[in-house]
Amino acid sequence: MNVRNLVAEFIGTFALIFIGAGALAINVGGLLEVALAHGFVVIGFIYAYGHISGSHINPAVTLGLLVAGEIQLTAAIGYWIVQFAGGIAGAFLLKVILPMETDLGVTVLTTVETGGAFTVTPIMGMFVEIILTFFLVNIIFNTAVSGKAGNFAGLAIGLTLIFLILMGGPLTRASLNPARTLGPAVASGNYSDLWLYIVGPCVGGVLAALLHIGVFKDNGSETE
Image (cartoon, rainbow, N blue to C red; front, side, top):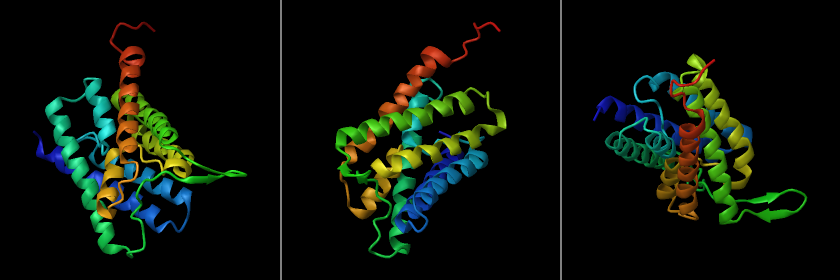
C-alpha cells in the first residue's frame, strides 16, 4: 500500500472538513461562502495531490471508482480509513479552535422557507444526497478518470461541487461525502440522520460508476 497516497488522502480530507465545515460553522458570508470554501479546497487539492492519490478525499468517490474497476479493493480500504480519520481529525481541530456554541458544520436536515416552511424528511434528504453525489461522481468519471478534460478536470470538479452545494445546502447541508458528515458528527456528538449521509452518497457514487461502465466508458471499440 502506497504511503504517499494515504498521506495525500488524509491531508486532503482533513482540509475539506477543516475549511468546508469550518466555513459552515462560522457562516459569516452565507451559502455562497460555504459552497466556495468546499469547491476551492477540492480544486486546490486535485491539482496538488491528484497525480499522487487521485485526490478522492471522499469515500463515495472511492467507492464509485472501486465499482468501476479504477482502484483495487485493498487500496480503497486504505483510502476509506484515512479519509474518515482525516475528517474526524479536521472536525476535532475545529472544535478546539472555534467557540463552543458553533455546531462544527455538522450536516443535518433543515427547515426551508419558500413562502411557507417545510422540513426536509429523511427520505427526501437521502434522495437529495443520492442525486447530487451522482452528479459529482459522474463529472469525476467524465473529466478526471476519462482524461478528456485534461488540466481542466480539477476546475470542473470543484465548480460542480460549488453548484451542487448551492442547491443542496439549504436542504441537507449538502454533504455528498460520508467523511464530511462523520467528522463533525463525531466531534459534536450529533449523529442525527447519520445513516442517510452514508447511504445517499454511496448509492449516488455507485450509480455514477454503473452509468460510466455501461454507457460512457471508452472501451476502444467506438468509431469516430
